Amino acid sequence: MSNTYNLSGPTSWFGTLTRVLFLTAAAIGGVFMLAFSAAVAFFVILGIALVGLVAFGFFWVRAKLFGKPFGPRAQFEARASKMRADLEAQMNPSASDDGPIIDAHRTPDGWSVDD
Image (cartoon, rainbow, N blue to C red; front, side):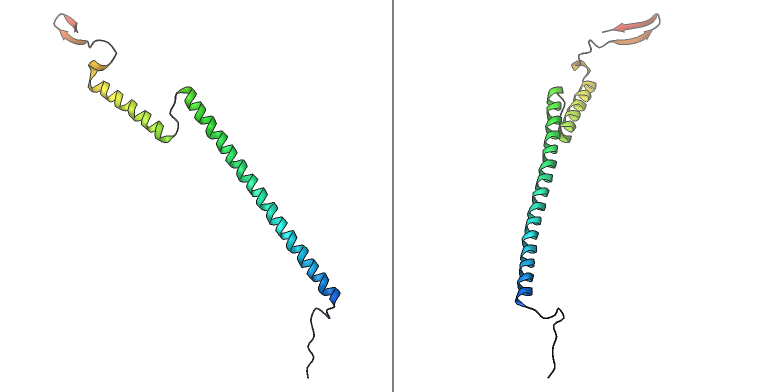
């Protein structure tokens, strides 16, 4: 018959109890570390979201106070409507508020201006 030996040495009830208590304490410590890490991550994400909300609110209020469009779509629409109005004013000069249209032309006696 062959003898088998345990590499960790002979185990006693005290060694087994110590090992179980150590593994239990390690498992409980691991759970607490996981909970602590999750809490820290939660507060970091909450802080980033709060800073983003404050920045958004600042720029939104600033846009409302100064009457400027807020956001890329609103800025594009404001510029497009201004371009349309400018183009319409160029195509229809009588619609502009610059005053009457004056036509200057050269005559044999000099320049003449007609309304």
